[in-house]
Image (tube, rainbow, N blue to C red; front, side, top):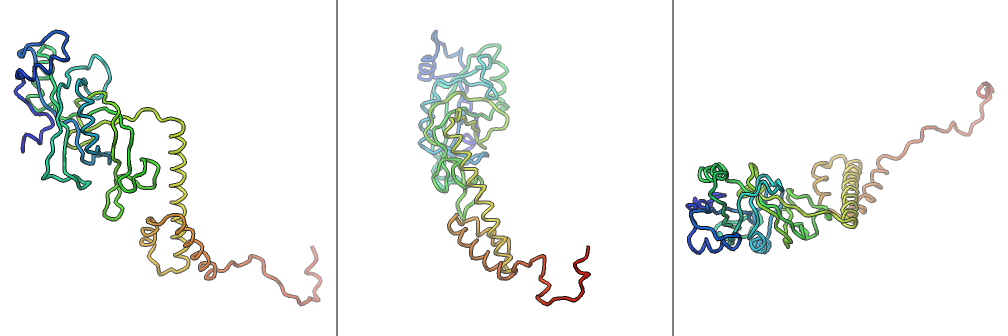
Length: 293
């Protein structure tokens, strides 16, 4: 449907009676329908985004509750001056016929927002109606980022988001949202259909140390795989180095260490060490000038 392809969906701008009641929950003084401009927007979805991350369905449901009452601003600039609109209602939309890159049914979070019909907002309303202000992005916090390949916490395993392991695409699944901060009009969102800006808060010392250790482990495995590939090619120069390196990517430390031992022994037999100084033999020489300086 064409309507669903838009990030912002104009609703005519004038709220119905039930919509106005929902809006007035956030107003200090009751607003009249003619004082308010309303529009709907696609906040975020469960598709893998440009950062190789995605929200799971449960996370979208939770975000739907968290975003009610949150402000709309511009480019994630957290200033009161930029507050323009506010979300007053959300709804999960499921499109069963469409499948995500992760292989499940596509769904997205739809929201309805309002702003005041003031002279200051006249240009923004015109830009929304004219399709200029369309792309949006959300700022939120999640408790977990999970690797789609092994289920480990993001940054603690050897898998790289955006790469394929066999038939599986690696991405980080965002789970258990803890807070929603704001939503913004942006030029280029991370999500292709709506956009998302994800914030995870400050990293504590223990988590930072764990992340550093994980990076050291990944570096060690990379070097070990390179060494196994090198020794295998020394042991048998008919081997395809590219194929060996690709095969080594799927092996873990125990297998790599065993191959390093085997290929190292074969390479040593094929290329035995040659001493730089050779023995002159046991025969004595009669030429004593050999020992003169």
